[in-house]
Image (tube, rainbow, N blue to C red; front, side):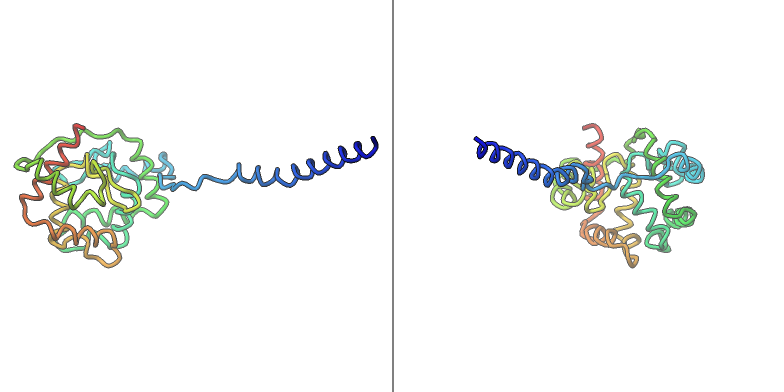
Length: 230
């Protein structure tokens, strides 16, 4: 009988020791941070509102863009892309080509912001509603544009032209067609994407160079415009 009691006590002790050994690991596992990619803006929107006052002159009070000033909408663009382009303007990777008149206007504005200011402005921009985007260009063939997009552009910009963060490719759907046309032609002509250090721009520039003609540009834009209704 006493042997049975000893065995029972020993078993309880071993179980207790096992529990003590495993508990910290379990708690540690529970407290481990999520390792998912976190690239959403961490800026201060209240500070960004004050900084955005300068931007509003061209991009509009609600970041809806102004065609008359050649300034695109920002409100519906992804934070990772806004951040990358503002940094490019700040570091002379964009807006320095002699034929990029609009980029030259933007570059000194971006240089007003430091890294923290960029995040604050983006945080404020992301509080804005998605702008209403109107079609201004005609003459493109949607079906031809769809075929070309799926063949050439979709690998980087994704199905539905919503962009791919890991490739730093921007969202195209919802971007103004006149701005898309200008940027595609800037890439085609080497006005954009040729500056040292603009890795992603250089990739895009090489792809854009292969666009055979203006009609293909029109077709692509017609297809991207068609996605707004989906």
